[in-house]
Structure formats: structure tokens, C-alpha cells
Image 1 (tube, rainbow, N blue to C red):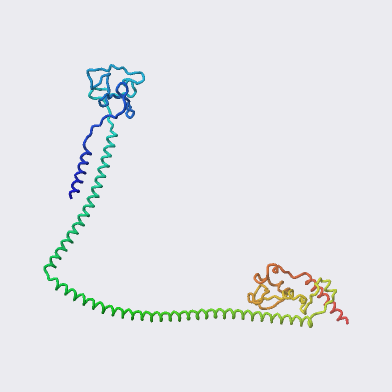
Image 2: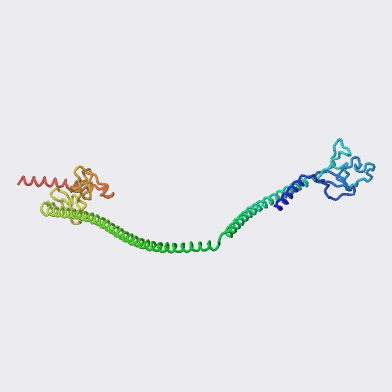
Length: 373
């Protein structure tokens, strides 16, 4: 507490000293031969010669009224009366001469004192906090000390031996109960461990069964997908086989018509019509090119019942009825899905129409000859 009082006293003394006025004297600059100099901060010329900064109006020093200035200023140092820096009021008098004090130094000094006082206040505040903390700790310690002393006096008044024996008996009882509790706890821990092991084994078996079920489900799904793929493949194979059988049947029919129903035409007629070599005709005067199977394959196309297009692929847009290409190209349009782009521009060749004309003439001539005979 004494330290606190001393610090508070120092703080108040420093605050009082802050507001005490001070005398400020002129700056310690050098003077010329006239005893004065220019103040470049204010732009004025003033004298000193052991006195505060002042002026000499009309060459008379206000601090020596009986004397006059006998010294004439030299040419190098401009006289104060003729200087551009000489400033004086109109109603100047020896008692009202303008001279400037260094207010900036006083302001800086005041700022320094304020900063110093703030620092002192912060230090005092910090010391006050520390002192308060220590005082609280000291009060707690004193209270604990008093409690201990009271307990000590209470123990002195009672019989210590009886108290110790009683405490020993209580201690033994507590040890016995603690041992019993430990044995019970160990038994419970063992039982808990056994139950945990059993639960872990059951859980493991459960996980194994779940894994087996998942694997079986995965195998079933794989088998189902394989079965679906096999069914699709079998359907495709059956469709291909049916198409192949239809093609074989068609070729057999065409061969039968070629060998049985084919009409014998003179070579001159075929040559005159421009029929390519290897082309044969059936009873319906439709050309076939069995020498090259690929060409003969394209001679057969398919149409649907109510369709307007002919198709190369069997079953495209439900087209299942076979028809010759020359007839289909005259009545139907080509399919854009199963017929390539170049084959869509196919037209019946001119030699076919020329062949039909010549066949018509040839049949008429044959009938005329038969009627004459």
C-alpha cells in the first residue's frame, strides 16, 4: 500500500508540473557586430546583447533609454531600419515592441510532458493491477492460514490416539470393501469380455453369410444376363437360318425355272437387244445372273403389304414379300435404311425394255408362222 501511495503522489505532482507556466528565452543564435541577428523563421531582425530579443526603434534601445545607438551599421550587414525583414506596428512604443518567443519549443515541451504523464499513468495502472492481484492472493493465503490454525487448535483439543485408531479402522474397512469391489469388477469385466467375443463371432458369421448371399445374387444376375444374351443370340441365329433357308429355297426355285420354264431365245435377239453375257430369263421375262451370286442376290428385294418402298434386308419395316428388282424399281422407291446411297439411284437398264420389244415381235412372228402352217 505504501508503494501505491508513493506512485499516486508522483503522478499528481507530474500533472501539476504540466500546467505550471515557464519563461521562454530567445534562441541561442550568434549575433553580428550590432548585437543582433535575423530570425529566418519569423523574418525579423532583433537585438539581444544580454537581454531578451527586442528592437531599437529610432536607434534607441528600450532597455537603455539614456543612450542612443552610436554605431552605424556596416554595408555588409543591413541596418534594421532599412531591412525588408524589419516589422513594427504603427503605434510602436518601447513598452509595446513586437518580439516573438519560440512557441514551437513550448508546444513540443508540453507534448513531451503529456506523453511522459500518460506513460507514468499507464505504469501506475499496471502496478495498481499487480498490487491488487498480489493483495487478493495474500488475502487468500491469510484465510487458508487461519483455517489451518483453527483446524490445528481443534485437533489439539480432541484425543489424537482415539481419532487415529478410528481412522485406521475406517481405512481397513475401506480397503476391504475396495478389494471386494475389485473382485466383482474383474468378474464383470471377464463376463463382458466373453459376451463381446460371442457378439463378435456372431457378427462375423452374419457378415460372412451376407457376403455369400451377395456373391450368389451377383452370380445369379450374371447368369441372367448371360441367359438373355444367349437367347438373343439364338434368336439371331434362328432368323439367320430362316433367311438362309428362304434364300436357298428361292435359288432352288430359280434353278428349276431356269431349267424348266426358261425360254430359249436366239442369240441374235439377245445381241441386238444388248443383253449382257451370262444373263438368262425366266418364264416372266425377268433377267437372272446366276453366274455371279452377289449380283443375283441383289436382284431379289422385299416389299411390305401396304408399303411404298422396296428393301434389300428381309424384315426391314415388316417387308417379307420377295419381288424382282426390275419390277420394284419401276413401282416403288428405295428404302433409305437398308439400301446404300449409291444403290438408291438404280434404274432399270434400257436393254431390258429393248429386249421386251424384240421378244414381243419375235412372239408375233412365231404365231404367224404357226398359223400359216
